[in-house]
Length: 74
Image (cartoon, rainbow, N blue to C red; front, top):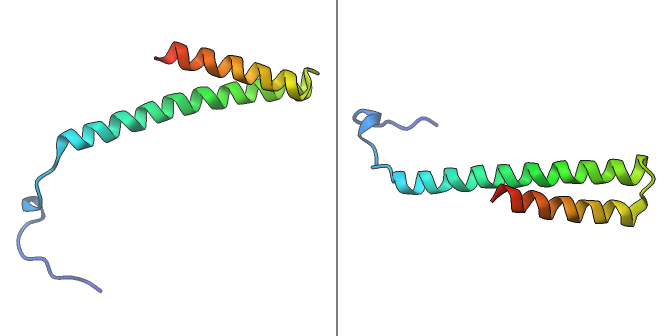
């Protein structure tokens, strides 16, 4: 169950900070664009279901808002 480690933990493997920064940048970009797409989806669903735009109206609103959001976030 428990392994016996000799020596302090701080002397483990060297960290690859360039890879950490690359992963962090990808995480931030995914979070940013994912949030924008979810907001566009919620607005399109509200317009389609509550506002009376229907399925195709909501789909059109989603596509337009997604394209605008991705363009503005770049």
